[in-house]
Amino acid sequence: ILYGIFIVVIYVLLGSIVTGIFGADALNALSTNVWFNLVFFLLLVVFAISFFGAFEIMLPNSWANAVDRKADRGGIVGIFFMALALAIVSFSCTGPIVGTLLVQAASEGGIAPVLGMLGFSLAIAIPFALFALFPGLMNSLPKSGGWLNSVKVVLGFLELALAFKFLSNADLVLQAHILEREVFLAIWIAIFGAMAFYLFGKIRLSHDSPLPHISSGRLILGLFVLSFTLYLIPGLWGAPLKLISGFPPPLNYSESPYGVGYSKGSVAGLTEGELPEEAELGPYQLVTFTDYDAGMAYAKAENKPVLLDFTGKACVNCRKMEERVWGEPQILGKLQNDVVLISLFVDLKEELPEAEQYVSEVTGKRIQTVGNKWSDFQIEKYQINAQPYYVLLDHNDNELNTPVGYTPDVDEFEAWLEEGISKFND
Image 1 (cartoon, one colour):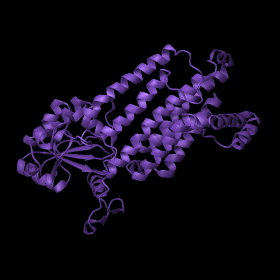
Image 2 (cartoon, one colour):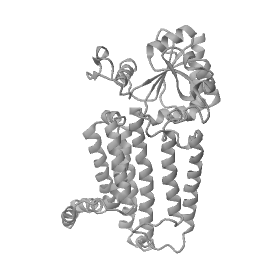
Image 3 (cartoon, one colour):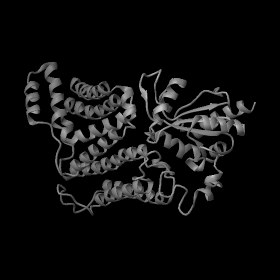
């Protein structure tokens, strides 16, 4: 039991160190940092190549030997060093997984790295603790062999796919339009298509054992991956792909943002000149303001309430809300006809004019970019710095109901909209 507990303690301590070094708030802020995302992209690519068998990521053997000697001391201290020896010796297999988990958790912010390490360590500790209690169980384990390498290669494919999500985040924040939706999906189709061929035994890597036949489990997994690959293909022509919403770039960040063969005017019923001043077309061709004052002035002129949307170019949950909730007919109709949408992006890197830059009264930091401005506005006015965050306002900046964050339940979000709109109309 102590052996299992110490395994958990060692990995949770690692997550705590990551959170302690960067800080819970800093991790969330880093998730939209271009360099942070580019470094993580490269890191995950290295992990993937390692799992493909090009090289192994290992800690120095001297570390393992030194810890192993201390494990011979016996007692509680010896048990702790036995658990530490497991963590070090297994690093070539667990390192890329731990690294990927910490990378993904770091992008979420808060105590996510600690919780991630807790889940990972429990998955490792429980089997090892059971085998320590009942050694006879080890006789029933499958023998090591080529199947273990196959597991690593499949994990390598998954790491490579996840890597491009971080590259996409950097591209979205920069608005460079290099990794648009179609390019991202083409890369994923290639990765998961290659994984399906690998599972079917049509692709072999250097460390793979001969495969005279495939097991039923491998066949089923291969069919699942092939089905997922086929599901992605219509996305190249504008299909919403709700199963993976939030991972690819949004529908309007593509080579054909209004659908293949359609232009801005033909879809929205508006030409560029007919759009309200300082407005643009957002998701589902909604008329969207990205400046608070301009949107509020338009809402007064149209006598409609304001839906204030604090969002981010690299915000996964924001894209999930837009693609899974906003696109539903009962929601989309209200967004088109009953409110004025103001979307304030907190991660835009566009520099503010020198005269508009200032030092925040709340954080003490210098506000230099458009994203900084809207982030500081959200913190100062609503005492929160999380996205998405939705606020329904009247024309005097008064809240019509309680603001909400990520609300994936369509009926719940619809009821929230109806409550605020009804209060405005009353």
